[in-house]
Length: 605
Image (cartoon, rainbow, N blue to C red):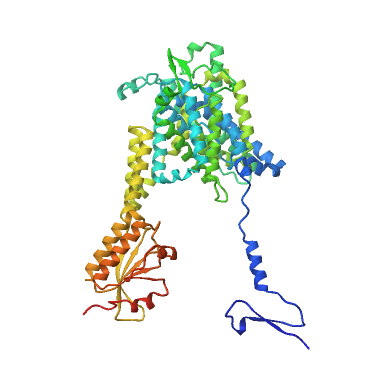
């Protein structure tokens, strides 16, 4: 005789949901097995070990293969040809000797290999950090720049340890774009004298044009035109001729090195055929030393017959000890977000890494550094696979320091200025202004105000203004939440109505008074004739302020014989409220059933 056993999937299943097993076979709960299979399939991956997450190279070095090594070698060499002329130019922009820019380039590239999480990110000197350095260290000894790098690294490291990356969230996108645009304008203005051969500083506009040196201006403008043309070279369409296309691409991304090398070689030949005095261009300063020496940052030193102690350096830097690291973190996280593949960015690890790059850099006399978007884009286009490319970039920079340093003095300042201007001109974003005017007037005025203050009072005050305006907007929204008030009719009941209060934004304790005013106004408008339903789904951080307000409203409505119904309030919040005769709770499905039991369901006669 055949045995049959029935199995139901879930309580309350009807006959159609039963499965029959025959032939006397033992059965087990397949629904349970399926449930276990689903949970095992979709279980979140186990979090990596703390050491693997912090020393990030340990998470990928075991899988490193020959193909990745070759791709990283190509990307590292390409990036090295880009970072060398940029580092020299950014050091010039910061007002320090050229070698300090290269010190920053090789150390940042190598440290990022061991701790960085995004292969495309290139740590080194940037126009942003150069401007910040110039802002706080202008006319100060170069040792102050090195100490600034140490302090910035320490602050960034602490921000990473305490996971303070959320601070960046208080700087909205319009402020960031205005700040970047302002920085680009400042770089162009600062480099205009070098581009045009004007030797004197802070001249009136009329005298500025009369002091333009024709040969420097011709060289500088020619270099800019060549840089822009070479930039377009990578966009030339050659059909299926991949070899020539690749060659043009390499020429395009190496344009900075080509311009600096060609102009320097031209001056070098000129000097050796005639003399240094006959050169018709303003040249870079002579570099005294080459390879860096590893030593402690100069926390105490003597310069210009003055002794600087660490406290004196802090006073010289004032707000720079906070502004520089925050700006560096802002730039670095923004670049990392642009190139992260799976959308999972460990911002704390990036801050830790940036801090270590600057701390280590200060031991080789480096200037403050962060990620550079242009170099990161070059690295990405070069096919970088892992952060190992930074090793090759660092070695190329060290080779330049050991071999090419004596020839830095032959590089015309006009060509370096052209490299900087051609790089930052594409950072200027004016198009978003029209979009902001249409979408948000507050963001528009925030953008304009930040840009104007950056150009007139300084980049740190411009950034501070943008942050304060954004915080004020947030506080205004928290203190004045938007609340919808409507008289609604009960479903399936034509004669019963209720007043519906629904916040459209999250309500914190700061917006409780506004919500109470809306409730009072609505009740007064409808003459206390209908029950009041408050949608509590947007109540956030429910605390004593909420409790006090709701009890006060319940008492006021009870005096008018009007029921207060709290709709969609969580069970945890309900448990915090004391029992009150005039407070009822309901969810979406219970709304129709709850209202009839309340007083004053229909308009009072």
